[in-house]
Length: 123
Image 1 (cartoon, rainbow, N blue to C red):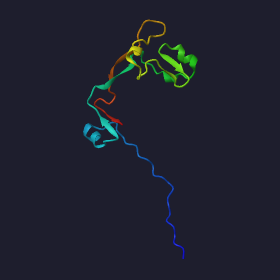
Image 2: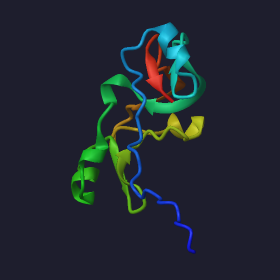
Image 3: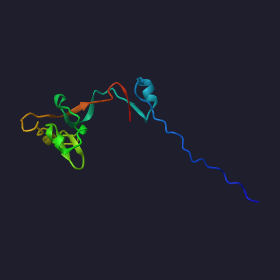
Image 4: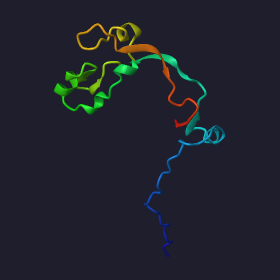
């Protein structure tokens, strides 16, 4: 006599995404591993980032021609169009990035503002 084999369901349950925005500090701390609440105003390490007046969304340009036309963006085949101030850039290279052909420095090498300062953010 044959024994019936167990039925296995092939449908997967939807994965739940943890909502972090809008949570206060105690509720955010309860969701440890998924959300983080920081009281630090600045990030720990120094990075290269654009000065406020030179911050620009370079990823909006799809062609090399339009990307290079702006004085804040550079184009590479690997990354596409990106801002000239790259976060993992060394300090001496960061200080050398200029606006087009002018002598105006567009990058700053310092501790950037913490985006999760006094708010609950996803990890």
